[in-house]
Structure formats: structure tokens, C-alpha cells
Image (cartoon, rainbow, N blue to C red; front, top):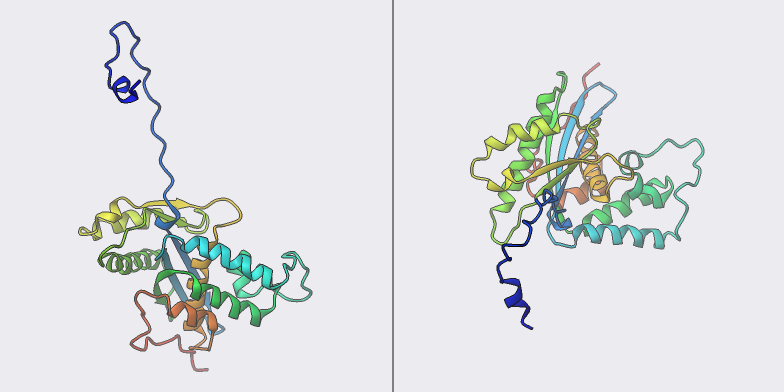
Length: 264
């Protein structure tokens, strides 16, 4: 029998009215439509402080899958060392502190850690935006967080204006304890982009479980590497060099000054 005809047959009056349906569940977005927020705040010996906000998004549908596969390849290339191998008298590296999963294959071997993570970042089909706030002698306030998000969203909006680009619908940040003002910052930014309808559909989700998604760790690396670059006066860093290749807009193109040490 033709199932189409059966499906279109109106219900008999004797039948009971259908029960009310449960509210539809929010569908999970595809990985290709998820962006990640990172942030880093660092100070040097002179007391100058830098805050960096980062936003990372995929440029190919397989971007975050490629990142996972790339990390698996690093594990295999290192002979699958134990991530729990004890390290005596060695504090965690800056990479281990902000991205424990991505740094895990190296067990504190700093040179291999930086070069390999730089290569992993360079191979991941993604782009990023960073906003840098150099506090100099002033304290960093919550306003820098809001302005940083605004600047990153502005760069992403310019990226989306090119043909055939599909916007992300979910923005993932670290837990509210780490980024507690992010929701308010996002709501403040929405009316500032009247010609960006994608922003009204963008949802924010705080990640509250361990471990964090690898792209979230990558967003933290982008922010931390940028902060280090500013504080350490352009010290050569393979991770930051990889970050530069991913920036949709480079704030360092015009020779942005670094934090200068105070004269004693």
C-alpha cells in the first residue's frame, strides 16, 4: 500500500486528540559551527600586566576532528608516553598550565612541546582573532574583557562577510568561575552589530566538565602565546609564530609597542 496516502489520511473523529508534545530539545550544533573563547592575563617582573582575549573558529568542517587526530599522531610519534610520568623539580610549563591535554605527550620537554604544538596549531584549519590590552601602569578592569570580546567578534564579522562562509551558532568558554562576566559581555555586544544577524543566533555555553575540549585548550594557547609575546618584548617563540599564521586580523602589523620595562 502507498504509505504516502496513508500518512495524509485525516484522523477519524472517534480517535482521541493527540497528547501535547514535549518541548523540542535544542539540537547540538555541528562541530564546524562551534567557536571557542580563550583569555590570558600575565604580568612581568616590573609589574606591567597584559590581558588578551582570543576567539578561534574552524575554516573547514573537519577542523576540530583534524586537531584531535593531530594530537593522536603526536602521541604515537612519541611512543605513547604516560601523561602521568612524574617530573621532579620541574614546575609546569606555560603550555602545560593552559593546555594540559595538548602538552601531555611531552612530559615537560619544553623544546619539543613548543615546536610540536606550534606545528599542530599551524596544521589545524582554523582562524583566530585576538584583542590585546596593555595595562601599563593602570589596573585591568572588567571593561577590557568586554572590549576584548567586542573586538574579536568584529574581526569574525568581517570574516563572515566573504561569500560561502557559514557562521558559528555556539560559542564555548571556560567555566563561569574562570570567565564569569562573559555572558553579560556577549549581551552587551549584540546591539553593537545591527548588521550581523548571525550574532543574534549565537549561544554561549560554559564548559564545566573535565577534560576541556581540545579546541578550547587551543584558544587558551592562542591567548597565552600572544600575552607572552607582548610581555617578553618579541622574544622568538614558535607557538606565537604559528598563531600569527592564523590571525584573521594581525594587531601587530603596524608595530604595536610591547610593554616596556620601567627604568630603575
